[in-house]
Amino acid sequence: MNGIPLGERYKKYFGELARLAHAADKIDETNVYQESNPGTRKIMDSMMDDNLLPGSGIDGCEHFKDFLEQVKAGKRGLILMEHYSNVDLPALCYLLERAEGDFGKDVSSRIVAMAGLKLNEQNPMVKAWAEGFTRIVIYPSRSLAAVTNPEERAAEEAKSRRINMASMRAMDAAKRRGQIILVFPSGTRYRPGKPETKRGVREIDSYLRMFDVMILVSINGNCLRINPAAPGDMIADLVTPDVLRMTASPVMECKAFRNQVIASLGEHPEDRGIDPKQKTVDRIMELLAQQHDAAEPGRLKMPGAVPLDA
Image 1 (tube, rainbow, N blue to C red):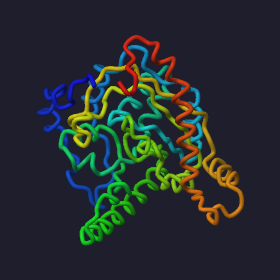
Image 2: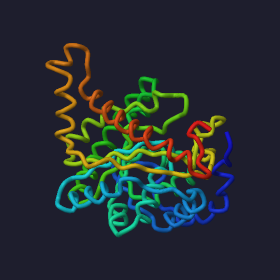
Image 3: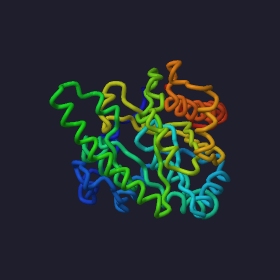
Image 4: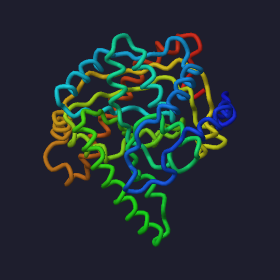
């Protein structure tokens, strides 16, 4: 796979990032809400300048405009987005702010991303980049599942409950302020050749209960790819300039969407071994995949576009 490791390509920023960074290294129930850091955000924007090739942009901007108007009218707004890399959120904000008109800047300024605590705790440089954007930190269920020692498991379960309860309170406050919550329904970045990393987590069903309207955003192109030689090391991710196209769906009513999926399962689906919560997020992932697949052929015709698995 072509590309330069992130730590090598942007080592020049390490000193400045260390000076500017101020987010907590360890997450607990007192610091789950992380306000954006304008200093590190400028560095992230410069990275987007370097790596988003001409032709990058957002399709379906009219849907974002509709979404914003509904949020401004008092509806609680949710963005559900595909997840390929740690610059998915920076790229979305960067492209929104450069879209024609003022709506994109307004949407971008309202976004609060739900983020796993690993972004804060794994590497100080990853944390510094992440803190350029407002986040609410959660303890992901996938992280908890990896703890197998019984004593450690009990301690981590207690920690996860404290963090996630605080995160839900922070999210509720953000909604009341008119902020927009962004969630990656897969809960993890997609790994080529591992389709299970594109499966949505059933907890997304709970978000549909808490929000009024949602918009789905698919991503084609990826300028920061997981390094197969070091898949667990975010600083080893490969910087790969690419044409990145994002596609926004029409705005959907969360309750109506959820009710429609559940109604399609028939009566008493649990008695037939069907999990309605999983089926709801499965349908979201299907729609995201359809958007993605429809956009990819056109993107690949653009100069410099790199196939996802290249």
